[in-house]
Length: 264
Image (cartoon, rainbow, N blue to C red):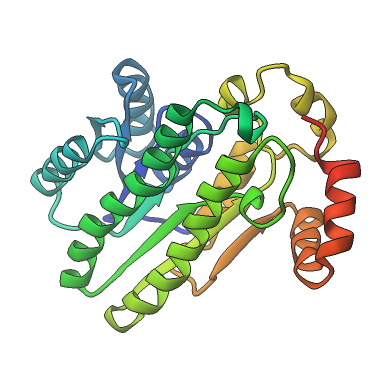
């Protein structure tokens, strides 16, 4: 039987689509109170209504652009006003752009780090303080296999996700004495709107279709590992093995990446 999350509160960023939306629905199905954060108010309200109908519990909408510190502060103030505790923070907001680094607009790089890294860190800092006070909590940071295995035309994106992995590893150590857990999720390609922005030509999606993950399956695996001591969730298994091999045989890994994994 699926674990119930009744009386639990989960905050999900990037909740208007993709993995974030799927996590909202998975948690709602298990009777959690959900707080949805993203920029698209119309989509958030639609998803929140569906989640509330599914769970019978509250579903709150907080529109915010996580690339702006002042909007993150305002979002957290709303969280603290709506609930007296947060059990889970799922940082699923982010975007990518598949382009050769020297041809990438510097503003895109800045925006990517503001959202993927700094926004994630800033909101985590605020929510983690609440979790420390309540002496419990679980933070899940969405990184990527791109942060572990390099491929061409993803330098800025890979760097942003490697930063998330490094940040999460240290945060895990710092929050352990307060009974607050931290898990990093590193998926390979997932069928989401992510590629509408990142993959302008559509070639990458076509070439890796056989590896593509379903966002609902990813969400289910993430939720199944809440409240556990899992450090990292690497998906799918083939790419998880590739990441391990790359760490041991980086020269061979570079060759294989260029030959088989850089078809963008």
